[in-house]
Image: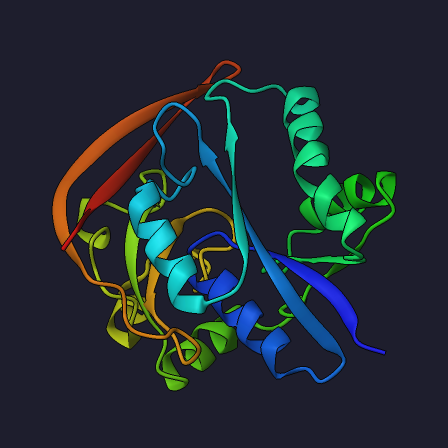
Length: 229
């Protein structure tokens, strides 16, 4: 019997490739996409992608979807409560699994599984423990297209944001940076995929530098704003 799955769509490359693998799996039925956005900014968190472009993606995939707004300054307990409310209707519809595009972050996978278990769901991780470079190579070989929309300034400078994710981009990454950005070094917006009804049209806007406070530490990020075409 097919496992009924909803997919946690981030708008980026790993999410896009993980969904591709699920759609090829005869034992899986992906029936819903779920994405969280920053409630104040109306953008995908850490990616900085506008809601309008996210919705263009979701419509191009042609699966039912929901967008969950998360408060800008949100403690874990509030986030978890919001997510439980968001997935409750899916559980009532018979969804048993939630899928993610994670590759190797053990703590994050464990956290996801613990939260899912509280509501009776199980996790699926199609890319889990795959080699990061092979993930990116497969993405490119299958003719997916993505643009780098944010970079962590601790690892990458302004020149990396706004570039198309291709082999030249990977070749230019400094030593120690994961080729798939799995440690948060960079995030992408997937604008074409084998299962998109059509590519997503956009224009490249300005680059912006923003800092974020986490405890006593300050983190800097470069963002490339994407505009509706």
